[in-house]
Amino acid sequence: MVKIIFAAAGLLFISACSSTKTSTSSSVETLPPNSPQYKPAFDGQTRIAAVKTETAFTTKVITSALAKPWSMAALPDGRFLVTEKEGSMRIVSTNGTVSNKITGIPTVDAAGQGGLLGLALDPDFANNRMIYFVFSEPVAGGNHAAVAKARLNNDESAIENVTVIYRVTPTYKGDKHNGGKLAFNKEGHLFVSSGERSDMATRPLAQDNSTSLGKILLITKTGQAVTDPLMLPKPNDRPEIFSSGHRNPLGIAVHPTTGELWEAEMGPKGGDEINIIRRGINYGWPVITYGIEYNGATIGQGLTQKAGYEQPVYYWDPVISPGGIAFYTGATIPEWKHNLFVASLSGKHLIRLILDGNKVIGEERLLASENQRFRDVGMGKDGKLYAITDEGRMYCLGTE
Ligand SMILES: [Ca+2]
Image (cartoon, rainbow, N blue to C red):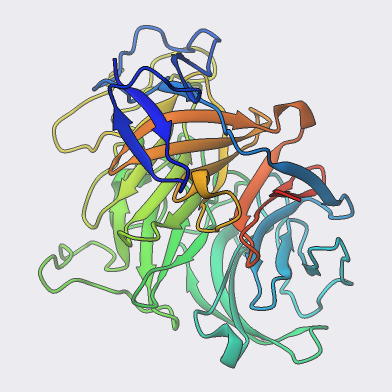
């Protein structure tokens, strides 16, 4: 059988060698699936072999003083800018110092899953101090996810010149499935993840490209659609739509070598997904899914596969509720190089996925004994891995 082993330099390779300490044939998941009637489309699409980190890494709680932190981004000097769901931002130093609330944040609708959400620094932040963030904007008729840009002022006390550059449409009176994550691609354009607002009234809009609900969007820094002249949108399609058929994508990250966007989205009961996001592709929700309704009913026609709808690279059943995701790009723990880390909310752990090209070939669950709802994960400038939890903690995973 194929075994996974690690070289001292941290390079991953596949071998028929039987001397390995890192892999077992069984999955980390031992609970029964929510929907046992559904079978994966290919080997390794779910319940992949368990792996275990060999490096003796350390886990530190660097602060417990955050209030529902939601998203994080490393500043050039190694500190983190962090959003808090209720509508604040703070700067956290890796020694655990937490700043006062940064002022100038627009009013957010923090009901339910809404609030101040995703965050990204301008690729040229070191020179222009520009930040981009998503918030639930309260308006007549409800709210919508809005993408704003602003400048972090020189003394870091406030953001200034706040400008909304994009608003998800339609506005809806609800408090769920906003998506709301941001990631810059290698050309300096901004991916935005948008949820389908959860309710039966809006769920079908994930398949309606005249709306931006349930989509991954690609916009410029000024909020204009980024189109591909070889794949122009249909007449009624919103041109900023990059991919469709998403439920609630809370994790997006650009792969460090391929430049492709990887995404994690919450499934219903069963069927949390990892996808590689490509332009013009339909990722299926709610036509195909590996999950069922919370009341146990099938969704739609109960399909997991259908021509024209993309399969997830990997899925979880039962759910782990994926939040943010990040590729490990540091040198502190070489065996983690380019592994994909996934913050797990209901699972209350941090997931490590080992990838081989477009496939997931190993899964590990870290920090399960911490009993925290992991909301987001990200790289530090120091090569360590950081994560934030709904309970208000920031963790640092390193070797000292
Ligand atoms: Ca899907």
